[in-house]
Image (tube, rainbow, N blue to C red; front, top):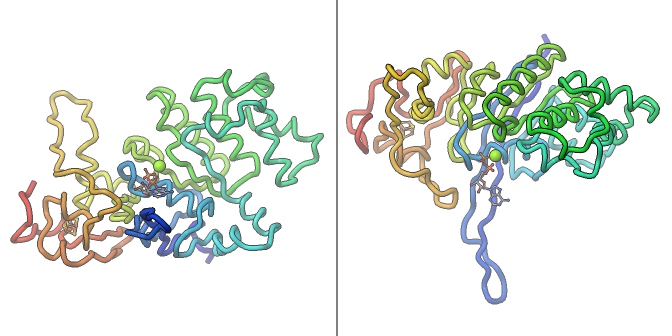
Length: 341
Ligand SMILES: Nc1ncnc2c1ncn2[C@@H]1O[C@H](COP(=O)(O)OP(=O)(O)O)[C@@H](O)[C@H]1O
Ligand code: SF4
Ligand SMILES: [Mg+2]
């Protein structure tokens, strides 16, 4: 049976040294564990939502997978092939072939589009780099891509500044699709857009996935977008993944106290229903000074002595992965460290 997982990430780690400049030389004073030995997989044709507060390591995860920054450790497989080794290796042909299979969509399409290029030039560039089509066929492919993402043929000869934010993100998506990728890594693709435009782009992404059989790693701090688009969801806190489950399970019956706290922060549209209390206490700790053992223990309403002493291992039961000593479906600890929610 073929492996259902297209993307497999095992023990991925990215550390940044913190240095202090001295009179003659700088010395390392600490380390930022931006992404700390995380593991997950994404099944072919499905979407894994990666969610967590700003600074928790989502973009670092994306950029490490794509080898835009060098990982400090771990392994990334695409369809069983070693993605990081291929992208970082000496075989340019193999690297290009791998790059074609995984494409990145950025949060801010304006920053990632060349302002001096027409949309046709932007969309032709990947065709040139990957030598997929002869130059004479580029124009037809550009028009096809524009139609695919809901833009008009006359948009081909316009410049990025002539577009709205939503239209620019459509161009960003079209550019990613130009090379017929299998996996799209979408890093906060709708976060800079107005709510109504956000829904249009999310609908476009859902349609493209169904039509083209694409696999998505969808990164967002916006839980409503994650719920709409994801098949499964991974929750990240300070460089660690703390829970992974099917989207409905995660939203209806989360087991990690941090997941519940995140969900309770979603605004409730019904004025008759009281908003759930946000159970988080304290500020998010600094990445340079992370709590030991369970990184959430300084804010967790269920934390006990064991949480401050031992890091909870990630355990998976029936497809639900969890790293917590006192999950929500089990009794609360007898002697919590702080006030229980
Ligand atoms: N180049 C870098 N040097 C040092 N620290 C970094 C660098 N890039 C990111 N970080 C740190 O890594 C952590 C994760 O950042 P990031 O992946 O951008 O988070 P997110 O995308 O979830 O908001 C943050 O604490 C951030 O300050
Ligand atoms: S391990 Fe302890 S501190 Fe960490 S999330 Fe679970 S209960 Fe809270
Ligand atoms: Mg980010």
